[in-house]
Length: 141
Image (cartoon, rainbow, N blue to C red; front, top):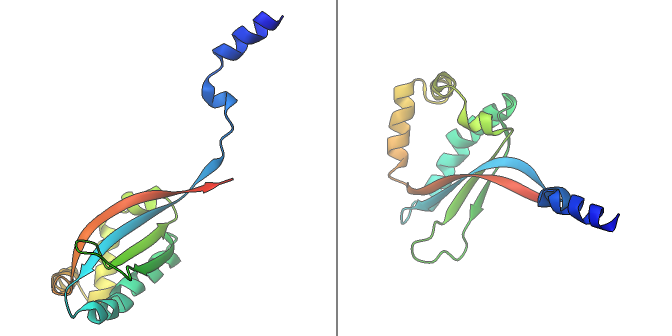
């Protein structure tokens, strides 16, 4: 009987035997931003306008759960001084939203898609986007 149990246990996948101690959570986009010298406050003022308004609308539309800004208080050379973090309701909310939705957002905020494009170009005078990643939160059970 012991040999039989040993054979059965050896045949089980390791994942079945190991207890999963974590759970997958929300998807987040994390954007690393380096503000240009003298434009930190200008960029935060810009974020407080269009970026915040857009995210508040996306919360109402059920796409976004929350958003945060983190400042790198002791940024070293080559590091961003801000991280913009958006918590999405699902991966689809960030990856599968049709272009038409974003065009409508641009029209609401800037009057037209072209106005949104112009505002984005002008925003480039304030900052450099260093990277953007999509990550998934992991929490322990």
